[in-house]
Length: 349
Image (cartoon, rainbow, N blue to C red):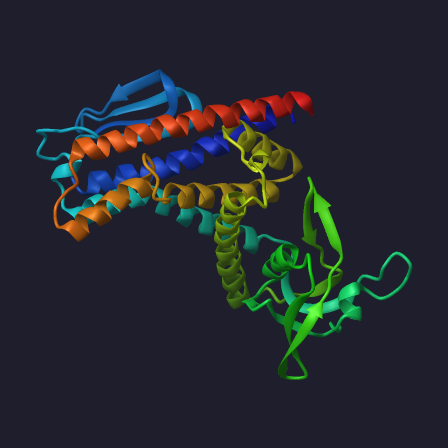
């Protein structure tokens, strides 16, 4: 990975964080909240300036892994009539959720552009099987699939694009599975279809042993591909989190800012489309993870607002601030450990 790839990676990572914080900033300003500081990066300031009309300080900080929008009354008592805590619950909810929603929207936009400029749009109709090395028919063919089958579901999970089909077989095809196909105008469910097994870093997954037809590049197909590929990305993030919690993936699969920058850098070196795809995954990942109901994250703040809605009154601000402070300490500790792991891995390659 060369210096240019590293610079591009840091720029993309910083841009996604900027988009997240800009979501908070713009909605806060729209709701009339006093914004004390809008910062990109963490740590010491490189430079900053104060807006003459708004009084907001805009800062660029040394470490390009983070950022924040500091608002009056966000984590402390404030006499400012335009403090965040002085605003109605619905406005506070929108401001808090806006960062994650911005990342999700940008992810969808980038995915749409990726689909528009992709070489082809893969369908779920089998075009040709890949024979085994000994010349025998492909495993999935020998266990029920045929050329011309339109695969509509894998283990009950509907699939609409080649990307969904590939992912579902990779995830579920480590053992015989049920495949529903459209054949001769009728839906037929084939039981115990098998696929070849592959593995990477000790994790087994199913592998496709056939090619699919490309779809015509119509407006409707582009919209369909963009929608379902965006939906698939969200599904992949949730299921990866589930796999991490349940132990399918070990903690070595977790990456911090250093690991993310490495992946972005490798994608930048391999091609523009790879970089855009990784940016899509990372942007949606930032959006989803920040919505988890954990202290210090946007989702944790939204959780307290939901409690406020149910109780009909605010949670004591000092209590909420203490919970978020403890959450920040824990998250920073985890980040330090993960970053140390990422750096150690770089030197052991």
